[in-house]
Length: 104
View 1 (cartoon, one colour):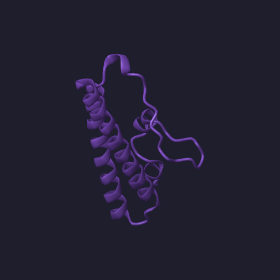
View 2 (cartoon, one colour; view 1 turned 90 degrees about the vertical axis):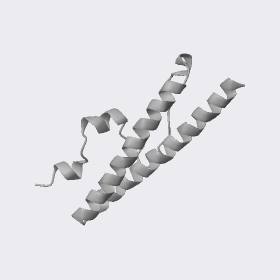
View 3 (cartoon, one colour; view 1 turned 30 degrees about the vertical axis):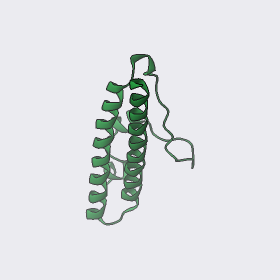
View 4 (spheres, helix red, strand yellow; view 1 turned 90 degrees about the horizontal axis):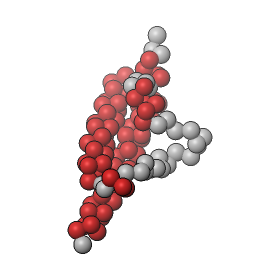
């Protein structure tokens, strides 16, 4: 019975994590399109906030799951425009979006 409760709790955490990833992506997309510098910064800070929440929740998920269940979980991002979404590793390599690094 405890295992079912644990699986249910992990499932709920994964759902919340997915929802927060979508919100982060939404804020990043809005920031890329924003023309006002202050609005862009506000959106980037909101995206960063959701990124921190996702990282914290993901660490809880990883610590709760059984070691035998720790296979990579493919979470759909909902972006089907070109099928090439950056992975978390690619985002970490370039912490700033392209529009911020090419301001000159």
